[in-house]
Amino acid sequence: MSKINRYLRFQDGLSDWVGRVTAWLTLGIIGVLLYEVVARYVLNAPTVWGHELATMFFGALSILAGSYTLRHQSHVRSDVIYRLLPFRMQALCDVIVFSLGILVLCIFFTMAVEFAHRSWLIGEYSNRSIWRPALWPIKATIPIAVGLLILQSIAELVRAIVRLLGIPYDDPRDDISDAD
Image (cartoon, rainbow, N blue to C red; front, side, top):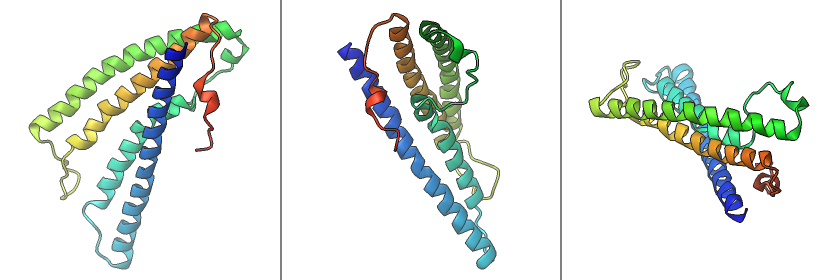
């Protein structure tokens, strides 16, 4: 069990770290939009890049936060029936859901890698503004985020299997404060 606990602690730590780093993008969004508002309405000199950069930051923030959100069990879910099930049945449901989820995420990961790679190969640029930034960096965050979500999903699957088998273990998440 110590190897499983070490793995779960490592994966949870990775998801927490990514979540904390990603949260800083919020300040980037605020800064860009604040600058854009001042430039537009006070200086009467709007930027050509403000809106598009804020949109890119928000896109990265939204998808990169997925593994952190899963690690903290904060994704939206309807658990009206789930809560009524016995502990082991809940674990079985989790094993099924995470197994299928990982399969779907692996397919999505493959597609996301191809999507980002194609963008890089053709030197894709945005045509939404005259700024025309390269799109491959933001598209590259998609397979990164999906890969991180797969890793956290595997950790959640391991937890579910351990619970299903009735193996006693200390959930490393119990030791870490959610007050971050």
